[in-house]
Image 1 (cartoon, rainbow, N blue to C red):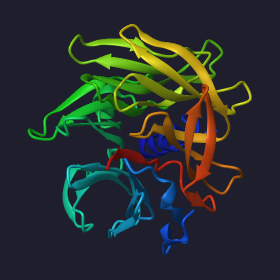
Image 2 (image 1 turned 30 degrees about the vertical axis):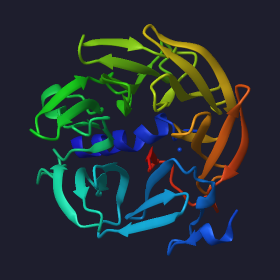
Image 3 (image 1 turned 120 degrees about the vertical axis):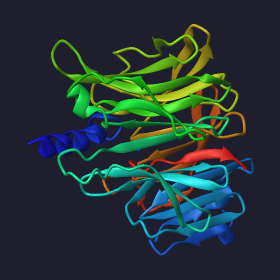
Image 4 (image 1 turned 180 degrees about the horizontal axis):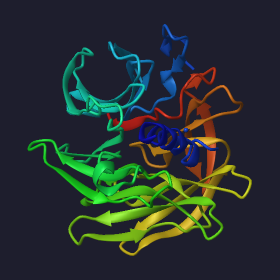
Length: 330
């Protein structure tokens, strides 16, 4: 029964989170998976990393680099130094693995395979801090002690392998997701916190945790039903998604202050996932779906508090929103 409940919770997490609702011909690259990328649209300041069907893909303005691995279920890969850390998803568990630039497995940071199907663990949503010394992730690995199957938030020191539990989930809510570090303050991390209202309807808010003061502050409201936030490279702006009453995602942008968020306004409405800032001011990237087959990666400019000049980097809606993508400086 425990195995079945854990599997159900894992399936519900993407449903409750954002998953309810993710020029020059010489730059177009066609992969074996038939995904086309027009990297001419990627800004010269940026490197975009994503993972599809076990292949780590890096997009820059000058072209595409593909790193195949022997892990076909690899997802959520992030660059860490010269290597990559990603989620190796198996049927009953996931692990956090580190890979080289050739796709070779270097080591397993967190192994979800306990050898007992009733106690196997899930590890997802890895996020590296600006110093490249700490990685945040969410996991249900404490369930044997807490009897709560939802994902909690943890931070691992990569030098010492020590792990600290940062935030516990609201039981039976789907848990915590999408931890993101503040690039301007290594003591600040935000995450999506899922819970239920008085009518037992699920909603989420984005919370900020200060590791220095050990305090938690909500950045968004219940009405916004917010998730998948991201900081600008200078830490002065914050972009995130919310949900209308009809479940349609809304993309917000706000200024970051010491008290929280200010000047919050809507950029656009659409079937978006994972908005991210470029390293060039007033530019963003995001996933968007027009139908039900998948997502495409887009670049756009923020002009007069609205999205303008939206251009697709990929075509065919073949990207999975559950994998997301990472924007780093080129």
